Image 1 (tube, rainbow, N blue to C red):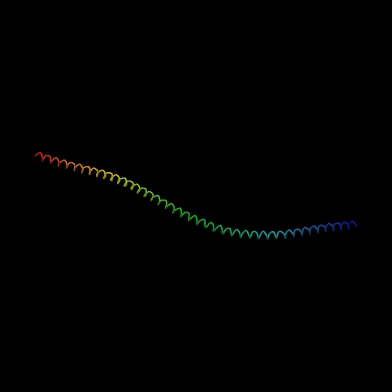
Image 2: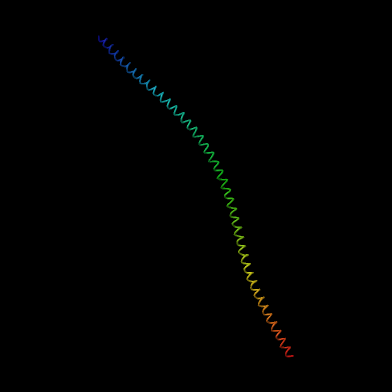
Length: 148
């Protein structure tokens, strides 16, 4: 009887162990199923991220190309601007030089006009003096002829 009890006790323990192992097996199957679903979602997410990365890389490459083109355009424009500034500076110096020449020539013309005016006045004065002297000489000659 003790053997029977022992046998039944062992059988009960084995049944409980079997239930425990079956529960554990069922839980592990559920866990595996959840892990598979999670793995599928992760694989989908990874694939989506790869696609997004590919799109982002293409966009980056396009933007990088545009940036390089804009840099080239900037450098070209900068070179043109520098050249034009140099030309402008050269033209400004030429204009300043010519403006100084015009000023000097204008000043010289004004001086010449003043000298001319002064000479004309002297000429008129000399002419006037010559007429007066001629008139005086004529009068002197008349008086000399009257005296003779």
